[in-house]
Picture 1 (cartoon, rainbow, N blue to C red):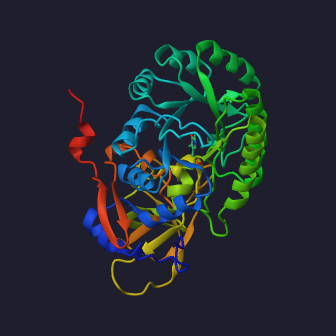
Picture 2: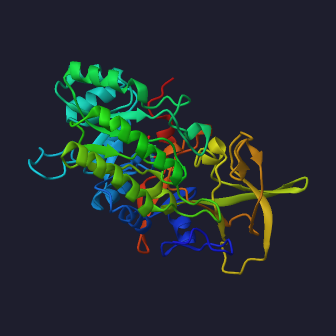
Picture 3: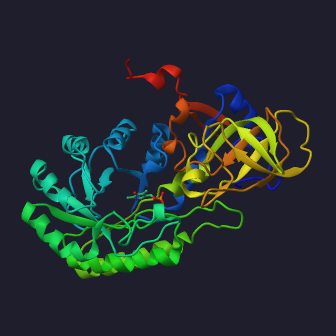
Length: 429
Ligand SMILES: *Cc1c(COP(=O)(O)O)cnc(C)c1O
């Protein structure tokens, strides 16, 4: 489970040959290591509910894999509700057991700041639980699903994220219901005849644990305003993963202990059990994913050497969107040992100067020390299993790549590469 070998060479992913994967499925290709995903699910076993924020990686095979690990799912759109149902999730929980038991958890929760008309229809049709990020959703839901239970996504008035674009709290964020509005929103819910059964906060990705801890305190204060109808508390997502050398995993048990203490104080106050949820996206899949791409040109622009590969920001957008760092390694086509390393910039095929994988925040082209590669060698972009394929696009009329799941040395296609026909489907002249 080492992200990348120190040598910068990688010939295998989960026991499968990188060269064979490229040969079998073509490039660029997303490959996921199933066992890494299982491990990440099990890391969070202390929580009553692990709810996968599927927007990080929503391939049906991945959803099926986490479902078999007992992980529930979050949906932010009609399409994600459809995916969850297609992957075998039940639309809603069975009726609550009476007595001392934990309240049942809904397999699918719709979390968003709006209902578009389609998503409201889908929620009503399937009886999906809703986590409301805007007060206007309350009346919209009440009209169609009288008496429903809802949870509220709270903006605690502060936030944090690894970039301005991933900050999800504070005045700079559109997400959630502003903490000072909660008493008013509770009155609106009561007036509309909806039960507020839980609270949720998700305030930013890639954040440090000390900061996440502040969230628990803020949520506890709001929970007391909600009162005894509260049976679920969600800590949201945002668990970081190490992308850069030297970064480490978060202290998961410390994080759980902190939220568990919050939960226990609320249980004592209310006199009933409270379900504690966590809602990771990135954490469950980031490290499982690899983009396998082929070097198609090697050239010098003045003093700088460029490797141009057949994946671009149409394949993996995080570098151009956020200046994100991804480890990279080289898989030489032949068996001969690599001859040294060199500093190179890595770019893709798009007619767009931002199509560079080795860029820093602000779009500056940087270089990376990689084993010397030539045309035909494969370049593996690592830790690409979250916000990777799901953000891929058809820009420059490039097909979406194929996805494969590698499990114990065997591999299978879980999404076919798009065809030229797929690219013009629905168009007419
Ligand atoms: C994106 C998102 C998550 C997951 O965020 P990660 O940083 O990938 O863990 C969790 N909850 C909600 C509501 C989200 O929008």
